[in-house]
Length: 67
Image (cartoon, rainbow, N blue to C red):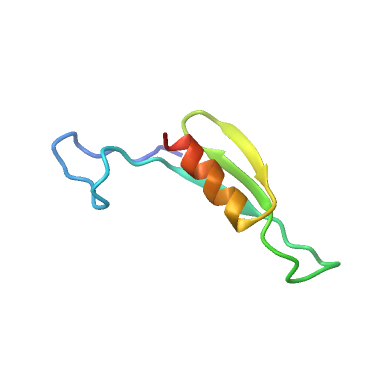
């Protein structure tokens, strides 16, 4: 799957200098439904993957990658 690229002169719809792309896979527990958000996030382009066990941890991972 190709990552869509925007022209350098095209302004970002979010006002950022660049856009990063991620795939987020959510793990659902059949044993304990509603036990919270957990899964794996992958940064496209680098292929780096990290596990997360909460919304706060997912947000921290994406924020760290965005620096």
